[in-house]
Length: 155
Image (cartoon, rainbow, N blue to C red; front, side, top):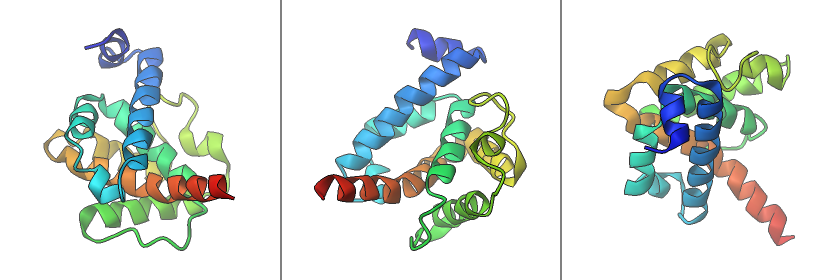
């Protein structure tokens, strides 16, 4: 366990922020190397990293991914629980009109995360018995954003 992981496990906001940054980079790198979100979710390294990240980190990333995907209206989120949760988080973010700071909450990346999106993200992130679903959800939300970035780079 690294120093920031240790700090995050103790609830330190800087530790959570650094863990968010590290895990986010790993999510993006794995997505960029994969055909789609479903393939990325099968990466053993990413699955292990996601499972060992603190629930606050996972929740922060779910909230951020939902906000980032809020303008992606033509996306089929997929089937199963992960697809339903991704669609629900996307819907909360797409319909939120009070801006990024209010969506994330005052202490971001530390909880609590406000609103229904915050409650859902926190619930998904806290479920250590089914951590794969929250990983699939975050990847489903990030995938169309990453694809848009790739398309813009090709122009």
